[in-house]
Length: 118
Image (cartoon, rainbow, N blue to C red; front, side, top):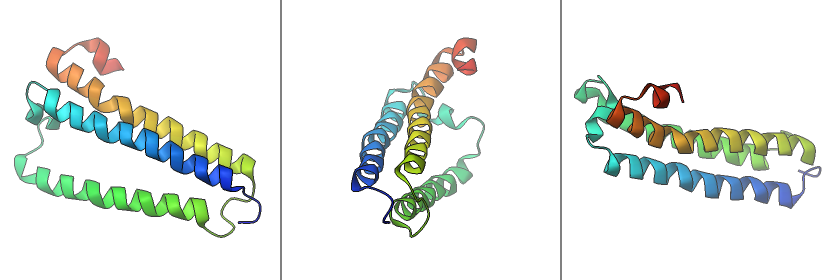
């Protein structure tokens, strides 16, 4: 922990707070704005949806544990420069996740090849 400033750690939590909220809000928006929310599941059998939804919460818990481990784990990252790379990775992943649901809703509602490609 000696090689990494508290600002670098704080930036990771700010990134996760802002973009993580964006991801959650995009999912809420997607479910409530889709013409047919069940169409977002594609051809997934309804019996599986409960299990998949439950696994999403387990995955979110794993994400939180991993993020805390990266931020405070001993000797994981030894410089602010390395931490910058992790922050950049988080930004890319969370920004992509934030637009995934809106683009999926647009595709399901319009069947536009443009949204499928995006």
